[in-house]
Image (cartoon, rainbow, N blue to C red; front, side, top):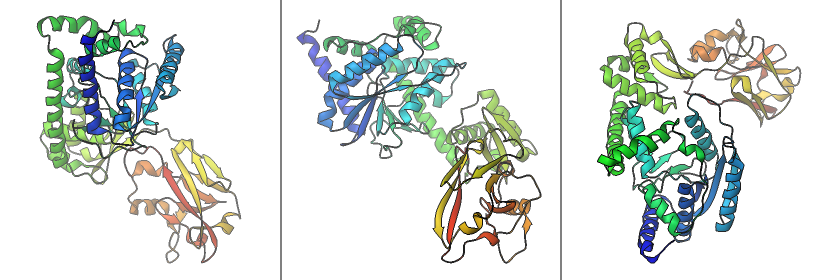
Length: 465
């Protein structure tokens, strides 16, 4: 039962959370709290609700139902009732978690995908100081480098995981790209439990948290209690170590930026000239910029070996759903995509946007006048999208004869791996539009004539063409 002697710590905790919010959240920002229904997120939402008026931010909550535990629907019902009592708007999202080797990682990815879709400036998650210590120790046991061992920052961008130094406002946060905020990161689990007891809060317990077949639960229930016997301040010291690792990672990133010259890719000649350690650091940084999952140490070393050997500029390296490929002296990251069947064709029936899922692209047809493709000529025969088969000829310039499409693509410096997936627009059997090349001279709209401006929007490209 609560008593008056517990009030000062609770008030101090409220002030500490208010100070974190004051450094990052501005008046009028929209903050969405991730609410699982467990004690950590329940306490976090209670604290955020208490300071929302004084800090003048809009507060809402999100519950992600992973549909894994048989009691998942009851947890969602608890969260709805809790938010009704607080007067906080709640969104419940159901996700499906693929049964991968790293089930915990797959669940986390599904959860953060739901967060990223929210209209919010910030998504608040309830990681605490104990979580931080567990994460640092687990990363060290896995042999992580300094970036991995730097663990969780108070604030980070969701898109590329860029870490923001604590205490600095994030001027880049936006409603379309919420930043992840951890207001409880310097709060221990014991403090959270004491606050919940003093406030007489209720929560749900996830029975899977006791399952030591999960790495984090093993570290939490078996390993850390032994460490605490000799090192009771391990939470603070591991958190301090994570900050040192973060500073080292930042310095390595600065070194990588100095070593690289990225235009559309990483210069292979620069990578080949670097000492092994710096080359690995530069490649890590480049892959992180492209959103590629970091390879293990052995795989990274093999990448460098292949790129630095004679003829390395022609190397193609498979890497976790991507390929590293060379083009004109640059190293590019290319996502693996299945090639559509030969002879594939997609019909355009006048819609403003034709999505072609097999190519990960969409044809956008914008009405115009006096420019683009003549609408009248397009109506003379069926309009289709096709792939290259070889031997195509094209005349984008009325002053020059019809030329080989192969030569035109080479002159446009289009990478070879994109040429086989290049969507071509036909009217009947006449090639009338090629992305990055132009419109056939015979099909251009005349002055004052209704036309169509075609544009291909490539979706999910890992690096620019």
